[in-house]
Image 1: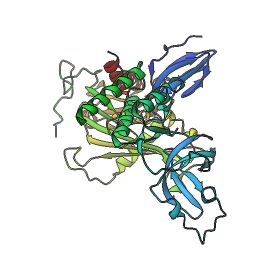
Image 2: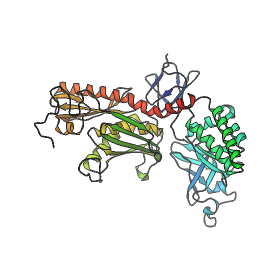
Image 3: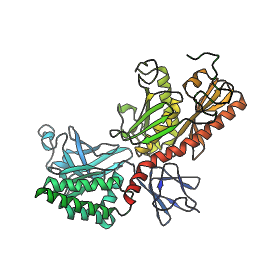
Image 4: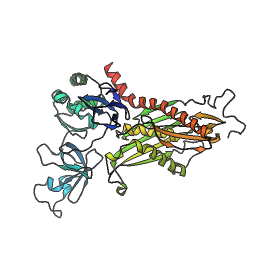
Length: 235
Length: 245
């Protein structure tokens, strides 16, 4: 029952990773009792389970996920939302308006128009139906201010860090509020534009260097240096 | 145009560009060269210069083409008007339509099409400069672009051609060899499964010659595969070395 790659090694689609009594995890597939990689990524072993942390991937909706999306179409009884996935999501008007919805009377574009950004939760999705969203919970709804950063969706866990170490560090260093959409879209709201830009810089760095070790320390160091530079420039 | 008297293989057994019969041309591969596409790759195979870009999986337009049980793969092979000596009309020719189909069919077995039903993947292959075996280089680049787009794949696909020129079996034909030679045999391969996904033949070969040419092409595929893999990893290895020192 050998494995052919060490932990944290880079693999490409088609690489044979393990043979025998292992369980195929994310981004892998089994053929003839052998486990192969299906995406470029980094190998991780979790007991007997073999996972590939993908370096290139796209977002696939899952129920209960918090996502950030853009309204692309206002329809008769709802909106079509781009959630950075292969499928477009739908947000029903009855979900947004708390009162009964009358198509003759209500103008949906008054509530949410094309181009508006929303934080939403996926409440329904399967292979044969497009994902459905809700905004009827605290913390969800239209985004009115802040900055948006797009990263590879599989790198969101890296932005969060072990037990939230990375994200809480960035929040603390920059004083920004950060909402992570599992679909790879991140909303940053701070008091000043500089603070927001600082947080954006940190997140872009994580996206680029997600597959390296000692990243939290390097990001902390970069943030501290940048903050020092900014203060010097002010004086 | 070269005369019939001109030899494609000289007395020393070398080809027009000085290669040995079983030698590949210079290859340079880069991945992720375009920022607007979801995935992209660029390949230089001798004088060939080819760009491949991938979009998707995304909602398929027109919608009636979508399939309820799997993704739809669409390919467009296109030669730029300046890619050959005489200007080529930019409109898709009969040959380009055929190559689009052939490239699509050689990539399809490598993709898990059933994962994301009702969506579509678009592959665009743009030949900037052509010098023989463009379909092979295109397949190599397109499969890299697919992997770069994060599309789940069974294996990468590599392609390489072999053929018969002046009675000799040669690897990786260039334009003049393709036109003046006796036969051309492009082969695409999924190297980890030893599965051939494309096999065409233009010209005449005896059974023995065919076997030799096929084996030579498969060897060529395997050589290109190592370069292809390295190119895909290059971006990440570079960053890792830079920051970890």
